[in-house]
Structures are given as structure tokens and as C-alpha cells.
Amino acid sequence: MKKLFNVKSEIGKLKTVLLHRPGLELENLTPKMLEKLLFDDIPWLDLAVQEHDYLANLLRKCGIEVLYLADLVAEALDTDPQVKANFIGQFLAEAHIYSETLTEVLTDYLNSFSDTRKMVEKTMAGIRKSEVPNFVTRTLTDYIRDYPFVTDPMPNLYFTRDPFCIVGEGIMLNRMYTQTRSRETIYGEYIFRYHPLYGNPQEIYYFRDFPSTIEGGDVIILNEKIIAVGVSERTHPSAIEKLAKNLFYKYETSFEKVLAVDIPKTRSFMHLDTVFTQVDHDKFTTHAELRDTMRVFELTKDPEKSGKLLVKPIEKPLKDILEFYLEREVELIPCGGGDVVAGSREQWNDGANCLAIAPGEVIVYQRNHITNDLLAKHGVKIHTIPSSELSRGRGGPRCMSMPFFREDI
Image (tube, rainbow, N blue to C red; front, side, top):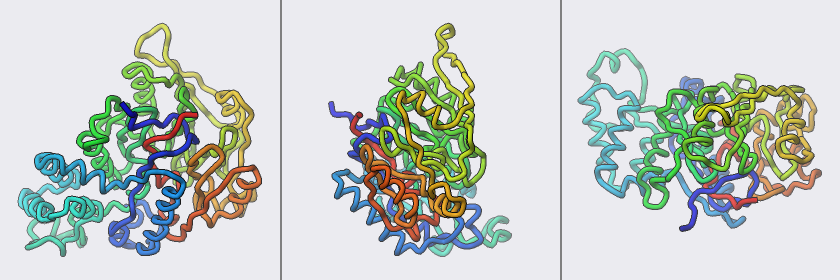
């Protein structure tokens, strides 16, 4: 039987990838909601879609199958009317619709869509009060809150890396750090439970109802035996321990070590893939403000106590750590070339966040020209994509893509 999921590196030739084409959720961003919805600015949807389509078409030209989030969710919901009904009920409950009357009204509204995909896109876009047939101000909350939405938009969805990710031959269905993004993982739950092709995977290493938060941008697969996970603002140490135990004991995967990388708990170091991304067997891009030494904790099986972990602290330069675990010399390519001004500017636009589509071949934002020139000088083949609007969400090409299948290296 052909494997559907296989991601055992960051650089193996990419064969299948999941994207989300930006939709009306970006049109529903307002200045007052920016901080709550984790944006610094309001992208122009029409141009953002053009830029995203450029990315998707580039991937296809490189022989990569492109899947879309809304398509997979709709295909999962159309397998059974009860699955669709369960999805609507769960979506409204997790959108904090507490009124029984409003729940009934919104259930009828979502069921009124004849096209399941359009219904799914509406849940992503956010539902305005003005769109709901016969909406009436009833509750104390309705009277007091001058707010246009009954369910919030999900503008971060085009960063498909974070809510769920493929690790090895299994799934991580993550618990998100912010309430704003927590509903994004509902879509993954229904895909991986009910989709005719991708549903019911044998191995789920993390689930969205686990108590500790973890996000896909913090997960970097160094090889078939070693995973690095960022201890970030959004990923808790106990989540990494839970993941390691599942990888080592519950499923007995090929992974033997999990490296918990302690990174600053700030927005500028949002996830581990803003600190470094792998672009070739021996090359990594790095954050412009990377400190001299990194604190890393190696998690392995405890040979004397089944189900337990050994934790080994390490404090060394990133280069030394990578060379030790990869057993080869590596080159670090700093975002902006190490220049304090260029590095700061290009880091803001995710210059270090590259998507490798094969060893030594990456997709990058066109605007980060200094970092891109450096990559080319180091022998890396680059494909540039426009990003004047996509970059406003503070995520790069790796953030916008969730590999389902890579060839082994």
C-alpha cells in the first residue's frame, strides 16, 4: 500500500504539500482586531491571492502536488451528513456561541449552503451579524458589545504549517497557543478522521485536546532519527515531552532523539523556523539576531525506566550543535548577511524562513534580496515569489506550506 504521509527531513524532494488560498478572512480584518488576530497590518486580499497563486503554480511547475485546505475539509464533510452536522456543531461550540437560539439560527444558516466548500470557507472567513438571516439583538452581550461578528475570522489560516503537521509517517494535530488560532485545528481533525483518502491515519503523535500547547512552526525534522522542537512563546516544554514519549514508546517510530531548543519568548522569535531553516544537507539560514550560544535539551528513552525520558542539557553555539547531531560540517547563512540594518529588515519579512523543495533548492520571498543573494553564493538554487501582501502576516514560505510527502534522503 502506498504511503500517504512521509516527512523524514526538511530537504527531501517535496512531492505533496497542503496550502490554504487566502480568502475573505483577510477582508474581515479591521484595525481594532489586528492585535487580537495576530496581525500587524491589513493585507490587500486581491494581491495576496495573486501572490499565493504564484506560489502554488511554482510548486506545480516543480512537479509538486498542491492540496488545498478547504477542498480536503469539504471532501471529508461530504462523506456523511452526520459528519457535516457534527462539524457545524463543534465549530459553533468552539466559536463560543452560547445562546441556544443563536446556535439554531447559525446551524440553519450554515446548512443553507448547497456547496460544502463554500460553507467551509464561510466558517474560515468569519460570520458577520449582517449576514445572518433574521439576526436579532437579544442577549446582554449583543447589546453591550459593539462588534460586527458572531464568529471571528481566521486570517492566520494561510500559515498551514502550524495547526497540524506530518512527522515521519504520522500526524501531529496541535493544540494552538492563542484562542484566535485554536479553531484552525478543527479542520485538521475532520480531514484526518474522515477524508476518503487521508482520513484515519494509524499514528497520531499529538492531539488538539492535550493540555499543553505546541505549534508546527516549532517542529523541524533534521533526519529520520532526530527532531528539533522549539521551546517558544507558543510551544510548552511539557508538550515536547508528550510528543517525545509518543514517538519513542507508544508508536515506536524511527525517531531516537528530540532536541528541545530554548528560544526567546517574543514575537520576533515566534517559532523555531524563524530561528533557522535547513536549505541543504549542510546549510541553514539563521535569524539575524541569533545569540552566540543556544540552550538545547536532548530527550531520549530512559533505558532503565520504560516510558520515561532522559533529559540532557547542552549549551553551545548552534553550528556546533548541528554539526554534532548531523555528523557533518555545516554552514550557517545569516539573514541579511549579518548586517544589523539589513538583517533586521529582512528578518521582519521572514528572510530566514525558506521552504526547501529539494536538497539545495528553496522557495523564498523576492523582497529579501540580500539573504537571497547570499543563498545563491552558497550554491543554493532559489525560486522567488512576490510577497508584498503575504508577508504582512509575519510568516514566510515554510510557514505557508505543510508537506504531506517528501522523498527520503
